[in-house]
Amino acid sequence: MAIHLQYRNQEIGEQVKLKQREWKIEYGYEKLIWTFDPLEVKNGYLNLSKLGEYINNVY
Image (cartoon, rainbow, N blue to C red; front, side, top):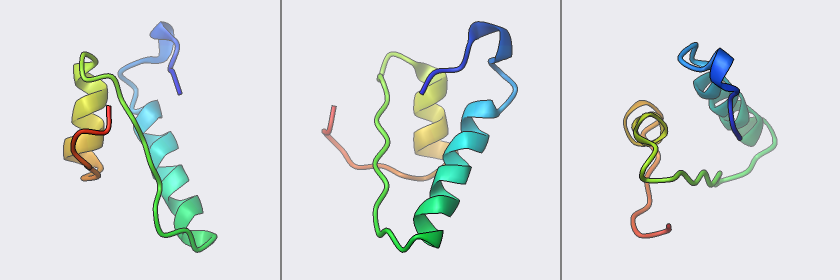
């Protein structure tokens, strides 16, 4: 997923990932896997701090 530069910093990515989590729960999936580029600090912060989802050494 990518957000166009014009629309960044509006929490759109976070809203999409939270909707994905809702979908996962609604359909009974146990796991949802997101990856991120470790050089993209904001995306890393979203995944690790805000969403609290983390598995080490997957990159």
